[in-house]
Image (cartoon, rainbow, N blue to C red; front, top):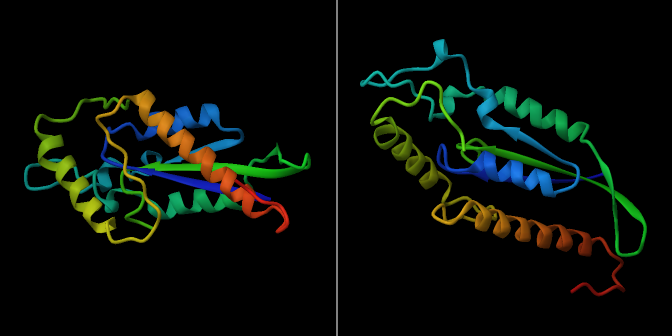
Amino acid sequence: MKTFVIGISGVTNGGKTTLAKNLQKHLPNCSIISQDDFFKPESEIEKDKNGFLQYDVLEALNMEKMMSAISCWMDSPRHSLVSTDRGSSEETSILIIEGFLLFNYNTRVYEPPDTPGYFDGHVWPMYLKHRREIEDITWDIIYLDGTKSEEDLFSQVYEDLIQELAKQKCTQVEASKVCK
């Protein structure tokens, strides 16, 4: 049983969910866990001095519940048979985890819409703060250019994933076989 986990993180309303769903359509046996599904109830969200609910902080999320969902998936992922170069089959499952503070802990429409000034005054500064926190992490994180089209971003990520999956398959081939 093999699993492959992909993390997609970035600013709120930056296209993470759209990218994850597009990848899921093109990757076999792919599941998504979205950090947005783990917000605490509004009554538990603190307000700042301007009265804005502080959704863009880790404390607004039930990360224990999210980590439990990830653990459950890891314990029992859905599998499909993927053919290898040698004609045999092996099980591989893909999990995409997406969220705005994904790496800080180990088109979306809001109803009602955000209060004017909320994005510029809170969401973006919090994103920059959290991004600075992960810049020193040694994980293999690839930053995407959010000014590119949705199609270009999908193509870039999809091609990178296909190459990474091929590399992983290559490392499992006998030592006598040469991978390109």
